[in-house]
Image 1: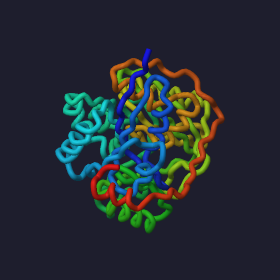
Image 2 (image 1 turned 30 degrees about the horizontal axis):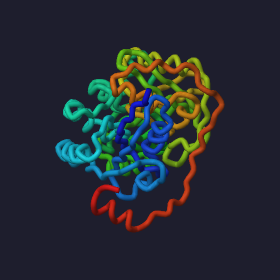
Image 3 (image 1 turned 120 degrees about the vertical axis):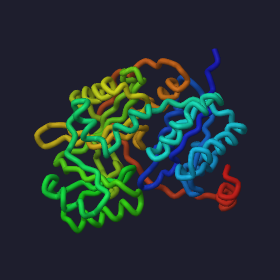
Image 4 (image 1 turned 90 degrees about the vertical axis):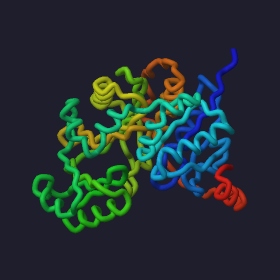
Length: 348
């Protein structure tokens, strides 16, 4: 019996110091046991390394930034689909998810499948709404508040105290140890991501992450926990180790069942010095370190594709504990003609 072959489009090819998940997702798809793939990369910039890396995308296209609006994105996807006949799209950036969610029905009408969170799931897990989310679902969340004026830093200084987390709505998080640092980070974040800025109580402890997959009916299809071993100055895990922590995995299953989460996710957790887990962030998509999950026995990109195609993959059981991922940088030599061709024509 011949295997299915899917043409899958993947975003997030910027394998830089704050990497997108795209390259890791594609590596998982290429190792899928249930189907064969043709990979179409979707890039926002001509210098995203995943565009040129051998063995990653079969063909890559430039797409407009989310700020261009959903009409521009839809028009571009229609043109790409005429060439590629896409089966599945896997978006991998928080900031683009809203656009793809808005277009989900339109794309389904073209035969393109996705498996994304619902609008209500996407909205209620925003950093701005996280304290209310914690109360609703019985999950410990640090005290926090969204602000739109730097003067509010002084207002909330006493209740949150220093050190204090300063976070952007979409990305970036900094630890401020005094008011001068807090103001600087506020200005840095607003210049890049706009308002609001989120202030969050700092929790002393150890950072843990869980990546997983919910089927939309309350079932956890995959869940892999890891402890960060090396963290960059941008707060990104550059190395991590898979762990077996029953408390953390039970909390993850509680999150999926109580929210009926649909799609991939990452929970950023902090284990306080007294052993309590605090939910710091929920990322509503597959994280950049997902290849660790693939490597320890839970191929989340493969299972997500099956869900998108209407299949019911069985939940993964155990996974290998004590396996590390170590990210590295290397220099890729690219022909200038390829770069110029991609920049001018929008495809390679």
